[in-house]
Length: 331
Image 1 (cartoon, rainbow, N blue to C red):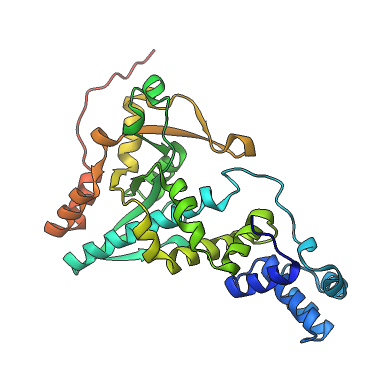
Image 2 (image 1 turned 135 degrees about the vertical axis):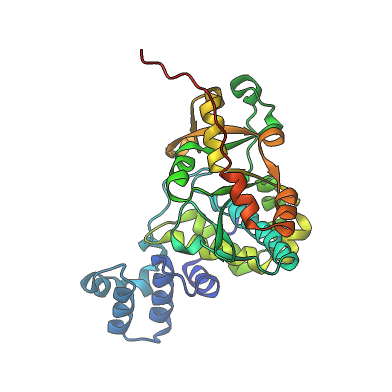
C-alpha cells in the first residue's frame, strides 16, 4: 500500500490533478504555497475562496494552519468502502469500455465517411454517452460494461449466467420518453476488474500511485471531478498498454424499446430488486435481464448494416412495429 506525507500528497495531486476543481486539489496547491512562502496569506485565502469551496472568512482562518498542520486533515475522509465507492470497480471499467467503443466508432467512420459522433459524457446527460450522427439522423448510445456474472440467473430468470445482462428498467423507461432511439452497447467482460488490478495498477508512476491511494482515502467537495480526471486521464495516458493487457470482448446491442418490450412480455425477467454494492447503502434498482444470444445483436452486424445502408436502417429497426391481438379485460 502506497503511503504518503502531506508534502508528497500535495506534489502528487498538483502533478496529476492540476486542473481539478476538487477541494483537495485546491488545498494541495494552497499548502505548497504556504510551506514554500510563495504567496501571501491573503492571496492564498482568496485563491481558496475563488474555488467556491470556502467563504473568504473561512479561508482566511484556514490558511495560517496549513504549513503547521498540513492539508489532508482538512479533507473529508471516506466513510464508506466497497465497490460503489471504489474507482476501480466503479469508474475504470466504464472508462475502459467507453474507450473500446470509441475505437469501434472510429473504425465505422473509416468505412462510412458520412458517419460521425458526438461525445455526450461531459454534458451531464445520464442516458447518453455518445451519439452517432449522419445527415441529420441521430443514434444515441449508452455504453455499459457487464462485469458481474448473475450466478442465479438460471433459477431466477430462466437464463444461463453467461447469457444474461441486466438493463436498469427505470432508465430504459426514461429513455423511451427522452431518447426513444437509444441503444445500449454492452461489453460482457467478467474479468475486467481483475485485469485492472493485474495490468493497470502496475502502470502507475509514483505520483499516480499516491493520487490513487488518496482518492480511495478521501472525498470532499467535487470529488467526482477529481475521480473523472484521474480515471479518464490514466485510461488515455496508458491506453496502448491497456489494450495489450486486457481482453477485447465483443459489444452486444439492444435498444431501450426492446428492453421494455421484453419486460412486458416476460415479467419473470425482473425477479426482484437488484442492490448495487449492498454493503455500502447504495440505492436499489430494478433490472430487466436480457438474453445475450437471443435478444441482442452483435456490434459487427450493426456495423455492417450502417456501412451498407445508413444509420436510418438501425433507427427503423429500433422503431419497428407490429399489430397484435391482446387481452383487454373490462373486469
